[in-house]
Image 1 (cartoon, one colour):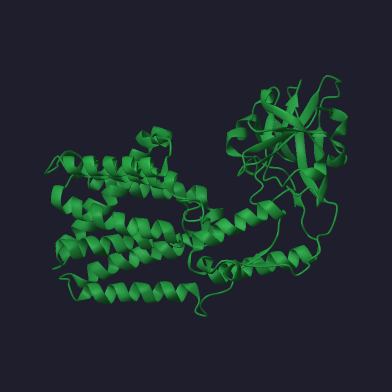
Image 2 (image 1 turned 135 degrees about the vertical axis):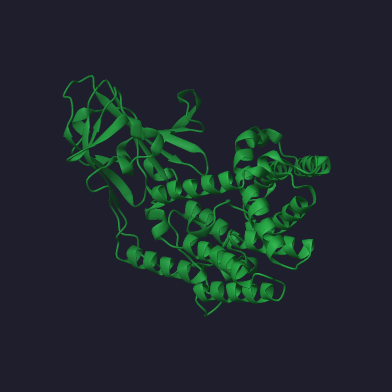
Amino acid sequence: MAARINQKNQQKRLEIEQGVHQFSTATLAVAQIVGSFQKDWVDSEKGVVSVKPDPELSLELNGFLIVPRLHQNIIITANSAPSSNEVSFRLELSNQKEQVYFHSNEFGIDQLNRPLDLAKVPWQVMTELDDSVVQNHQPWQNIGSFDALVIRFFGTDMVHLQQITILQSEAKSFDGNIFQTCKVRTFACFNNNAKNNLELKWNYAKGMSLVIYEQMASIEPLWWLIFSALTTCLIVTYRTVARINMVGLIVLVYVSIAVLQQNWLVLYLEWVKWMLLFVVLLLLWHYREAFFKTQGKALSVYLVSFGLALLLVLVTQKTPDFLAGLPGYFIWALVQQMILGPIFTDFFKVNSKASNVEIALLVGVLFSAIHAPNHTLMAATLLGGFVWSYVWLKYRNVYANAFSHAVLALTFYAVMPPQWLGSARIGVFF
């Protein structure tokens, strides 16, 4: 992980030194538009064409930050657009992390196909996506960096856009003032979540400041993964009957972890989602008996889980509005608990001589490992995987485990400070 981040940051340093920091869509495609806005557009031979009146477009910036000092011009290239004086468009920029939104005045359609000077635009600053919450007007140079761009058209049924380019007006020199995480905060050397949190804070505060991480080990991350997998396999062979099956399942888990770290996963994510859904549905169908047969009501699981969540809310003084997502998250938790209980835990129970505690510990370790490299989430899932596996062996009630998983996970996400958790992402998405 450290090696990959170092390589990424060194490349970013080179780009900054060369003054290469502008954004362009090349030929615009629907795939480059944020999902909720895609319904307004269809692909054409040279760009995208609107299919609804007053179309709106939000670009996928893919981590690119618009920094006022570096970017002062935008060019919206249109193949065709109505010439009526009643047709106009507006730009909206936002900082999603800080939940602050900015919008320009409306421009005439004649401002397309030419550089639009953002520094000459009076920007209205809002704290919500609601025009009634306007705070004041701010000059371009006095507002922070942006990570989202929306273009809204008014008074037209058809716009044909070809390209959107955010020009770099000034090269950013590299002055050597680099934050080195391990020297600023020692704790960040040992916690990937703390690293990510510091990087985000500094980037937003400084506008694309560079963060360099010191590599903690000379061994490539892949070798750490292989050593860990081999160690796990060697340990379980001393307690197993069907050694090949056990080792095969563990190898499968570690192969899955390795896949989650690959950059190509991002490129083919949509295909992977459908394949994963198909595999999950097959597994749920094969182990469907667990939905209908339970050995115990497991009331203690419900009570302890709810009580622990309530205690965390009271101690941290959080409002429990996050529990509104419980019904939806319960479905996702149910899928995970089917994999933890009927699939993994029962497999180890049948194919090993291990005790229930040893089986639960092994399941907890594998469940934790799949959440790499999110250290905080790995620690939480190690404990959760152990407890839920043990509870499954005792009560065989997948619904109780799913409820416990859902309510505790939502509470955990709400009460954990950002420097500890930051996000629930895993693998290459972390």
